[in-house]
Image (tube, rainbow, N blue to C red):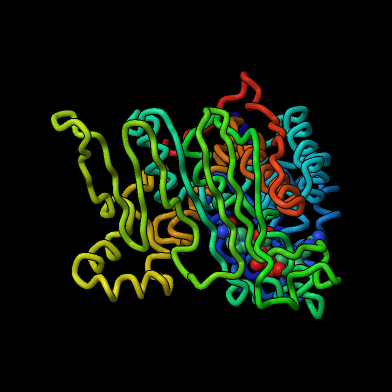
Length: 418
Ligand SMILES: NC(=O)c1ccc[n+]([C@@H]2O[C@H](COP(=O)([O-])OP(=O)(O)OC[C@H]3O[C@@H](n4cnc5c(N)ncnc54)[C@H](O)[C@@H]3O)[C@@H](O)[C@H]2O)c1
């Protein structure tokens, strides 16, 4: 148990961290929240908006003994080194996704966390989305039997992504926007893998799609910093439990929302499917061999107001879902009673997942236990993507995926639901 209160510096005052400053401020474990950005006008805006103090720089925060935690909300390519230096400086670290864009950095983070026993938690929204919570619960209960096959997707067309890259990319934003989709694979991989704790990817073969009209962003003629021709990537993976999964990350696709979902999750005894608005569960019917019992489980997985509209006016519901209806709301399956009472009524996002992510970091900090999205868990979500990109560049060659193993046996992992 850590009797200290958290004094955290939030690094990056861009488009995303605004959702999280109020959650850090309200958490009972947190004593002081500072915000910091290289762009001082953004930092000033945050200070005024959220009534918090600014901090001079990331480097100064690492030197300051009174600061015991750092929360990284910088651009997606920069997390690895910032996390490593913060751990080396003895700080607990929260990081937005992805963990890092190189396997060596991910290994170094795991080594440092093991040596220092500091908290590291990656804010993976996919881990708390309703389909992941549902498949995790039903898999643990044995509803699916032995796992056989699943598919998960993260669809985010460049027309939606542009603003994220323009935010801090300046005139060079396209060079960052051309990042390989599999350098950011965790939303989709986490949904399947977190449903089966301890399971990891052993082999991967992947392909990339080169036909995007955005030849100004994707290509190998200097369009981007990554020499990446692929706007979309898909991988087929073999899992350590013998199952198979297909993951696709698409940045050129005529689809809006829901953006991250498990479309299928099958076992020997049952299966889950999602399509557009409705969630379904099938299980063998014990009284009628060869037939299954089909159940619509939408009411548990969609926010109450979304479920209601699906029943009353399906056409409006699916249009509204595609435009973000339910994005800020929680669903009945989400374990809200786990959260501090101070979070009631505070803003949320990504289908009601934000509160859980900050609470996981704070309770890991306070209890000394591991966050569910600890480094060993998230290495398993992140590394397959980095290898898959190599496989895609090599035309779909089957490759081994390194695994960093389970967390140390004497380090308890917090439960997603309690
Ligand atoms: N569903 C999700 O989990 C989800 C959704 C959106 C964004 N994200 C992640 O959140 C992160 C932030 O995204 P964003 O859209 O806010 O980016 P952004 O570009 O709008 O903001 C990043 C900010 O970090 C600042 N910064 C960079 N390096 C810094 C440093 N060393 N010290 C201080 N400030 C620094 C930049 O000046 C910029 O203002 C990204 O990594 C992204 O992947 C995750």
